[in-house]
Length: 156
Length: 156
DNA sequence: CCAGATGATGATACAATGTCTCAGTATCGT
DNA sequence: ACGATACTGAGACATTGTATCATCATCTGG
Ligand SMILES: [Zn+2]
Ligand SMILES: [Zn+2]
Ligand SMILES: [Zn+2]
Ligand SMILES: [Zn+2]
Image (tube, rainbow over all chains, first blue to last red; front, side, top):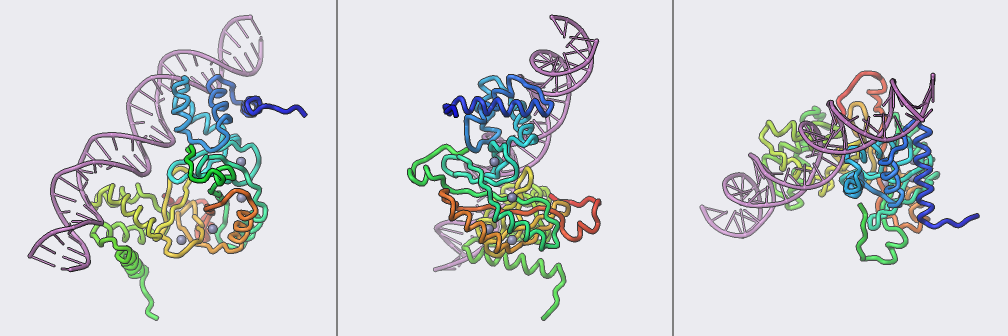
């Protein structure tokens, strides 16, 4: 197997996401490529407004950033996460699963919580409430941030 | 036991919440009484902005509504819930538990998900991530809304 | 390859949701 | 009753997100 640099991995991942958009009948545009590349380069949680700040100087309009994020979420390439006040997103190509968010550095890792999922399903079935969706998120500190505890990071 | 009307129950509940504020060293004001009464009368999910719309005409300023909601949350009398785009709150006098939100009528019921809680704890312990908090919410239809399915309600 | 159909963008106005300031007011312990 | 101080109101301000619409780019079929 060929070992890829982090950068080329990001480039190919961005390409994959753009390809997915094409498969959905959406067009490839220069602006979407810029937004998608910025997103995969982040490798963590981000907010729409943060992207705007970053990409507006590079010629991508606010509305385009919001529209692109919305489209990516609809297609399933982004998952929404609930920060304390605003909303964030994270890259998420897989199916249903949940996320661990590091509150210091903003890194997000997916977690397959199958046991929790089973318990949730059982609970939902037992209630007279018809449970359509559930929201489960975790927040804490990633391994790296546990190590260098006390230093400040750049979570969005 | 004396059977109370829904209204008197709400009144006493509001009184109890105000008493809790007093116990925390916070002052009793006319505006806070109005806000708290409006909240308990709702008996479901609500948003700060919704309260503003309702109480501004009654002489409670926007800032006061927001400040009161914030104070109530800090004291633990309100829990924040994550609606799709904005944030909401619900009355929550008890300790740690989670909530079922009816997406049609906005009613919220607390649920003690101890099995889920155990599974969550186990998962958290197994990860090298240091999980500080978790967020678990359910959304769906309450029993009443399942019955009269198809009709529109007034969730915030 | 070209032209048209349609999707996407940008500039900006608008809307919704909070946050902050500060002078004036109400509350509460003494 | 008094004084310390918590609280309020009014409105400016900030942030986050949406709508409009003329213009432009992309894809597709011929
Ligand atoms: Zn994911
Ligand atoms: Zn799940
Ligand atoms: Zn509760
Ligand atoms: Zn829990």
